[in-house]
Length: 102
Image (cartoon, rainbow, N blue to C red):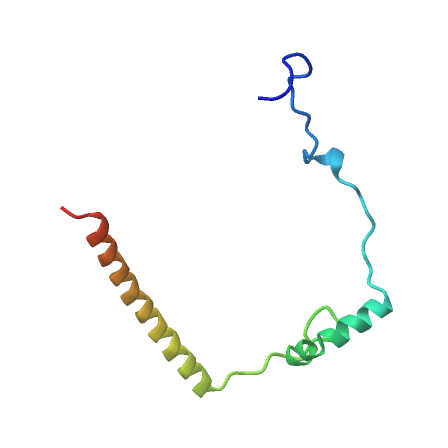
């Protein structure tokens, strides 16, 4: 134990959050140089997702999915769901054997 019995007993609220600690700042607006750097660093993403650094959304509609792609995707999702259910069953069985022994 350190310290003395005399002195303050309360712990000061140094890091307390609250409206008194919120500093209001102006809206951050990226400069032209910032936007150029963002466009350069994320060029592949902007191209892939059809975005432009000056727009708030895609500049093109999303590509339509072919019926073959949709069928293969749905089959894979069904397979993964089935696999997940099987694994959950095995995990439950192992848990039961480990923790509920008689």
